[in-house]
Image (cartoon, rainbow, N blue to C red; front, side, top):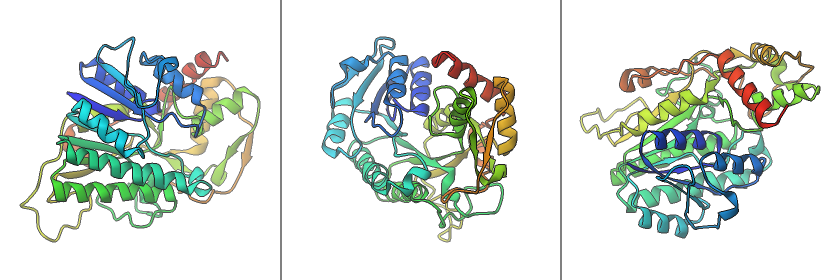
Length: 350
């Protein structure tokens, strides 16, 4: 297959591109390489896939030095003309949209970025898929769409109409927009609600990265909600395996479904939503203990109240993923954290 992956200078995008290339797919990676966090880390991820940052020019595809079937293009999703031109030239079979403005807390102070990248940018992806007969669009949603839901575990059959951050609202909007295009134009779309992804090459704004950095530098870590947070931490390799299973199984129309559909994750249209999580919530304090063991350092802790936009707990029900695609993430937090710590010490020479 020829697959477009948006966000390949990003954490999940880099890992997914490598996996698809290793199995023989042809991949075009796209990223705007914005400065939401350290651009050097993004450029090093590109180097990991054989892309020389010195040769990058906006809108121009660049061949990988490591993977003969990999090209990269620097492009913004908001650039509709550039995106449509890329689709016209490359003739993709499938698209995986991972590019987005990420982060719950950042959305409190920079709301415009979420509308531009996550709403306008996603609309441009949908329009490009519509006009170029894309066989399947898989896209990143988020566990944050569950918002103020308290029923555990979070199920894709639950109502998610009460987001508590603009980031979450933008991801819920993506699911609604995708359904509309599946219904009107028959485009198979699958939304992927990721649960707290971590691992080597992870984002510097995520807890594991922040905690590891602070502990090595002998600085205190900020422990929100006084350590009472519960998170369904999911290792990046498990996320990638789930995404690949989804890519290979596009949803099909369900014309026989009742007119009174009560499950928002299914439709008469070729539309689907899955949770991809470890289904094993971990208390934040236990997560910190695992980092302490991996580093051999005891953390200094600043205990703080919960921040606006955060939710106390996440817990994925992955039953549909297991039943329909035969997959259940299962990497332990202890193993995943050790893999991250080993990468961090090597990458930063700590």
